[in-house]
Image (cartoon, rainbow, N blue to C red; front, side, top):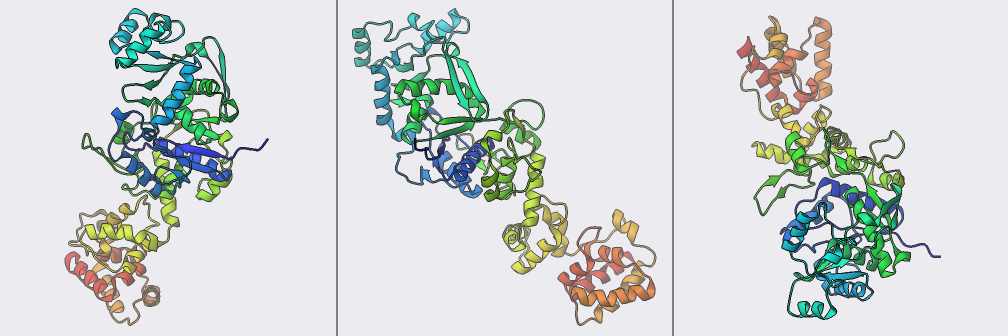
Length: 505
């Protein structure tokens, strides 16, 4: 028997911003597809027209573009199995709805919302199933002629799947093993609604996966209760031999407390839960995104990959290529993964340190310009090189640490703790001597300064480093003094030293 080509899909609904848990699901599908030389499909599941949000689809596509997760086919990517937007596949679904009806695997139900609510009041824990369907208004209880008349007269109806009771359904899950659920706990799910002539998720999902030749369904744990129904639907259509393998990923959990990670957790603790900033067109609310918060896409990907899976080693920093090579879907955790956002910031710092200064410069240049600073890009790169080893997690953290490169101290004060500790009785005279030495230099490079100053230090035993820092910075921060002085240049260095001497005496 020929082994099936690996084809997986990520199928979001355009109902708002893409949650970071959805990003992880897409990433695992991507890693699995690439590892097996397979294909990743991007499908839009928009059968619930009431929840459609303008701009959501474009937002999702832009998110994956930024993250570096590439799709092989689907909405906006093309392919031979389209259309890939479910709202454009109505006629396809109708054919399969009719097939189930003709084979007695589904039935038409006319119950109104009021009738269903009345039955819920009457029967505790009511569900529409083998035990209750005989009490309801459907094609199983109504004469065939009555069913036809109601349809012809335009009465709204749904098509429900007919679940046979008391059958053990086996779901072979690549992460959880053999999951067994008895059919008696399942209700007769709605598969199709005449009101909008669209199927529900359950039918559309199965039909699309079959027609698009999906070999593996890798999705979140929240869909595990639906898996038995999907198995039954595959059987009802006679598609057992092409049924995909399932893998249900563990939930992303709150950083603290219990429960699933939500946007409220991010708002409360100050971290994004969306890849890009999201402007809700309905409420006007703006939600933070990883991109706009200063995260590097490689760091986000690396961080997410290790939430629920690890390579079995101590290695934490991995390129996408390494992840593809090491990824093993069967080694994913069965239990939820706490969303350690602090670790996410650590990943970002590690990737910042690995980045070439030239790559980081455009982002820092934007911050400088926002603060009224316009300098050549080589000077932007130089500052990054001197300062990125400081304890920063994001490029935006640099500005308060290095504003003095571009803006001279406006005042010097003994109220500053560092100044009070390091500017003593002899500091003014020591700085005057240092200024005289520096003024004589023709070579104001790091090496040129170092040679002259170290000779003076050796002869006099003076320790000019901290007073010198006070003079150039105004407080106790900054890089190596020779590097800072060389960056500022001879004229600005001397101007700042003399101003400090004049003010602090």
